[in-house]
Image: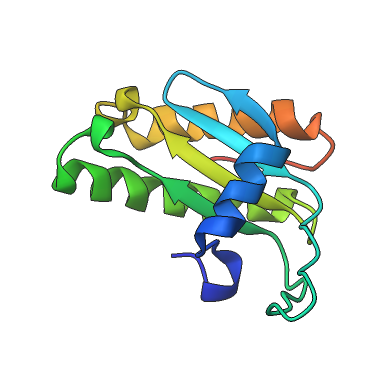
Length: 130
Protein backbone atom coordinates (compact mmCIF):
# COMPACT_ATOMS: atom_id res chain seq x y z
CA UNK A 1 0.00 0.00 0.00
CA UNK A 2 1.18 3.51 -0.76
CA UNK A 3 1.74 5.84 2.19
CA UNK A 4 -0.64 8.80 2.43
CA UNK A 5 2.00 11.34 1.40
CA UNK A 6 2.69 9.36 -1.79
CA UNK A 7 -0.89 9.56 -3.10
CA UNK A 8 -2.72 12.10 -5.20
CA UNK A 9 -6.08 12.78 -3.59
CA UNK A 10 -7.72 15.93 -4.95
CA UNK A 11 -9.27 16.48 -8.35
CA UNK A 12 -7.10 19.56 -9.17
CA UNK A 13 -3.97 17.45 -8.60
CA UNK A 14 -5.18 14.79 -11.05
CA UNK A 15 -6.27 17.45 -13.55
CA UNK A 16 -2.89 19.21 -13.47
CA UNK A 17 -1.04 15.96 -14.19
CA UNK A 18 -3.38 14.81 -16.97
CA UNK A 19 -3.51 18.20 -18.72
CA UNK A 20 0.11 19.33 -18.33
CA UNK A 21 2.02 16.07 -18.14
CA UNK A 22 3.46 13.67 -20.67
CA UNK A 23 1.50 10.57 -21.65
CA UNK A 24 2.48 7.01 -22.47
CA UNK A 25 -0.18 4.58 -23.62
CA UNK A 26 0.08 0.83 -23.16
CA UNK A 27 -2.44 -1.94 -23.95
CA UNK A 28 -3.80 -2.15 -20.38
CA UNK A 29 -3.12 1.33 -19.00
CA UNK A 30 -2.20 4.93 -19.74
CA UNK A 31 0.44 6.76 -17.70
CA UNK A 32 0.38 10.53 -17.24
CA UNK A 33 3.62 11.95 -15.83
CA UNK A 34 4.44 15.44 -14.57
CA UNK A 35 8.09 15.78 -13.48
CA UNK A 36 7.61 19.08 -11.61
CA UNK A 37 4.66 19.56 -9.30
CA UNK A 38 2.84 22.90 -9.83
CA UNK A 39 3.37 25.54 -7.14
CA UNK A 40 0.32 26.24 -4.97
CA UNK A 41 -1.35 29.63 -5.47
CA UNK A 42 -1.32 32.26 -2.76
CA UNK A 43 -3.82 31.42 -0.05
CA UNK A 44 -3.97 27.75 -1.03
CA UNK A 45 -2.51 24.87 0.93
CA UNK A 46 1.19 24.46 0.35
CA UNK A 47 2.24 21.03 -0.79
CA UNK A 48 5.77 20.29 0.37
CA UNK A 49 7.88 18.13 -1.91
CA UNK A 50 7.80 14.99 0.23
CA UNK A 51 8.56 12.71 -2.65
CA UNK A 52 6.91 11.35 -5.79
CA UNK A 53 3.16 10.85 -5.71
CA UNK A 54 0.83 8.59 -7.66
CA UNK A 55 -2.90 8.51 -8.32
CA UNK A 56 -5.15 5.95 -9.98
CA UNK A 57 -8.16 6.25 -12.27
CA UNK A 58 -10.12 3.03 -12.73
CA UNK A 59 -13.46 3.82 -14.34
CA UNK A 60 -16.64 1.83 -14.85
CA UNK A 61 -15.49 0.72 -18.29
CA UNK A 62 -12.99 -1.59 -16.53
CA UNK A 63 -15.74 -3.61 -14.89
CA UNK A 64 -17.95 -3.88 -11.84
CA UNK A 65 -16.94 -2.66 -8.39
CA UNK A 66 -15.15 -5.87 -7.41
CA UNK A 67 -13.10 -5.86 -10.61
CA UNK A 68 -12.23 -2.15 -10.34
CA UNK A 69 -11.04 -2.52 -6.75
CA UNK A 70 -8.94 -5.57 -7.66
CA UNK A 71 -7.26 -3.68 -10.51
CA UNK A 72 -6.67 -0.67 -8.24
CA UNK A 73 -5.03 -2.85 -5.57
CA UNK A 74 -2.78 -4.50 -8.15
CA UNK A 75 -1.76 -1.12 -9.59
CA UNK A 76 -1.12 0.37 -6.15
CA UNK A 77 1.20 -2.51 -5.30
CA UNK A 78 3.06 -2.32 -8.63
CA UNK A 79 3.44 1.48 -8.61
CA UNK A 80 4.60 1.46 -4.99
CA UNK A 81 7.54 -0.71 -6.02
CA UNK A 82 8.45 1.69 -8.87
CA UNK A 83 8.13 5.08 -7.11
CA UNK A 84 11.87 5.15 -6.42
CA UNK A 85 12.41 5.66 -10.17
CA UNK A 86 10.61 9.02 -10.12
CA UNK A 87 12.17 12.33 -9.07
CA UNK A 88 10.99 13.69 -5.67
CA UNK A 89 8.85 16.41 -7.29
CA UNK A 90 7.07 14.11 -9.75
CA UNK A 91 3.40 13.18 -9.96
CA UNK A 92 2.09 10.13 -11.82
CA UNK A 93 -1.49 9.24 -12.75
CA UNK A 94 -2.20 5.68 -13.86
CA UNK A 95 -5.44 5.24 -15.80
CA UNK A 96 -6.62 1.68 -16.33
CA UNK A 97 -8.08 0.67 -19.68
CA UNK A 98 -10.86 -1.92 -19.96
CA UNK A 99 -8.26 -4.53 -20.95
CA UNK A 100 -6.79 -4.28 -17.42
CA UNK A 101 -9.77 -6.23 -16.07
CA UNK A 102 -8.59 -9.49 -17.61
CA UNK A 103 -4.88 -8.86 -17.21
CA UNK A 104 -2.86 -10.37 -14.42
CA UNK A 105 -0.28 -8.64 -12.27
CA UNK A 106 2.54 -9.75 -14.58
CA UNK A 107 0.94 -8.07 -17.61
CA UNK A 108 0.11 -4.91 -15.66
CA UNK A 109 3.64 -4.82 -14.26
CA UNK A 110 5.18 -5.22 -17.71
CA UNK A 111 3.02 -2.42 -19.13
CA UNK A 112 3.87 -0.19 -16.18
CA UNK A 113 7.61 -0.83 -16.61
CA UNK A 114 7.53 -0.14 -20.34
CA UNK A 115 5.42 2.99 -19.89
CA UNK A 116 7.77 4.36 -17.22
CA UNK A 117 10.79 3.51 -19.39
CA UNK A 118 9.24 5.56 -22.19
CA UNK A 119 8.34 8.51 -19.96
CA UNK A 120 11.62 8.63 -18.08
CA UNK A 121 13.84 7.85 -21.04
CA UNK A 122 15.18 4.92 -18.99
CA UNK A 123 17.20 7.38 -16.86
CA UNK A 124 16.37 5.82 -13.52
CA UNK A 125 17.47 2.36 -12.40
CA UNK A 126 14.83 -0.34 -12.51
CA UNK A 127 14.23 -2.68 -9.60
CA UNK A 128 14.51 -6.36 -10.48
CA UNK A 129 11.16 -8.09 -10.83
CA UNK A 130 10.79 -11.34 -8.85
